[in-house]
Length: 332
Image 1 (cartoon, rainbow, N blue to C red):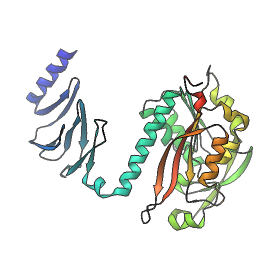
Image 2 (image 1 turned 180 degrees about the horizontal axis):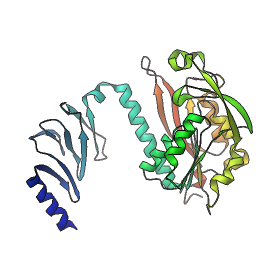
Image 3 (image 1 turned 180 degrees about the vertical axis):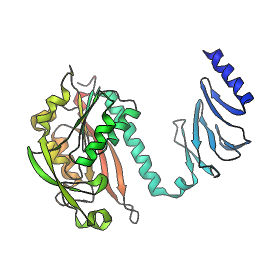
Image 4 (image 1 turned 90 degrees about the horizontal axis):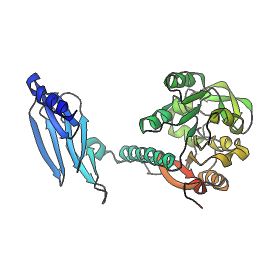
């Protein structure tokens, strides 16, 4: 196989292609163009084509970063940042380095998803209950990061559920349910037209001041079920269920949690969006939400800012990841 691979690489220049060999089994193939090598520091060089179409950066031993830029634009300048003693380097483009707030938020989202994936693996999670699934963004991210277990997504609004169903149609381990979850089985009106921020709760004065989308709204009647009432269906067929509860319901997470009743004890972990500055009337404060989760046996393993005020630097909401430490493999 390696011999065939090398022959293919040797043939490509004859076809007018340039090959940048990044190591065993890895190469970048492009149309011909001059290259410029710029040292970024120990173990990190920037390799660019003269037309600026791609950049290859050595980020350490056996590690490369490949970036693609818009045609006709220069792929830089870049800032190479060493990440402590990990041996890793972070490559920042000029715009990312200049916009601290956007960069911090993107970095927090990346770290949160990596942390959640690590916790799912550590605790042997085989079913993620995805509440407030919207179009399926969270589930799709889990799949990209390598999670192969079951996902049960719950989305109550018609437009978002249609897109969620489409996203999951070719994934046999991804269930979708057209309902919301809450403290009791009922129907309710949800505010829609707020994109990913649709909520059963009205916007607060602070929320309306922060987001223009909250100034206009319409409502849609939805079905709400209790978590403990849907769990059997979600876990059906799993010999030893180890579920993880993800909640992103725009101020309604504690209601979802309350609907779990005694079945909350079945969960090995959870993820909830907790508010420092409340966007919705009646939503719990961060301290209240975390206290309820701790009373349920969960402990914080990670806190990641979701949104931050540009003018003050204050965090608006955190993604809070909590696990039941007693459920960890090898725990007493």
